[in-house]
Image 1 (spheres, rainbow, N blue to C red):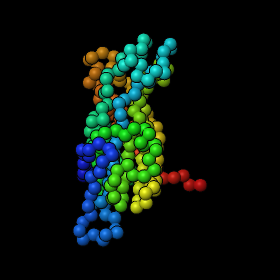
Image 2: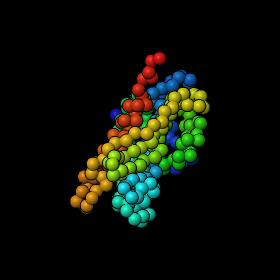
Image 3: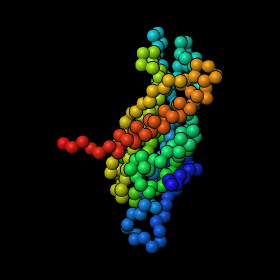
Length: 214
């Protein structure tokens, strides 16, 4: 069973760090010391493209005419954290034995993209980071609705720079969200959560896919 630990201090702060067994060689990485640090995204962004209106970020929340209403913050960082904790992320990312540390405070896109070293001060000899950069609800009168997510994954060894990194957008179609009336709110909310989990599994499958042979 994957152990999930909640980091109680917002970045930048010391992340929880595993301590190798006392009888383990000082220089030998152990599975107990391996850590996967996970960050949720910020608030869900809404992008709508209609026949006469479109392109304004969170247009309905800003009261723009012609933009369909969307529930306020349907995927909070706390909700995302619970959904991430329900998934076996070490298995999905091919990191068996890694301890999962879910951070409650999202990183900014600048923090994610500008960092060239670890985002925590953990000294674990085997360490990885899984970050959700953006979450977007896209509505298009032609293409339909979807939950689109941007992820980044980085794996480190003993060096300061990551040994491996991968980033990509994925999306899952939505048929019920956003709900058209109150009677549909529960089903639409569950569909959105399922789409979130689908986006995570799609990305991790791409991140762990063997490189193409030349």
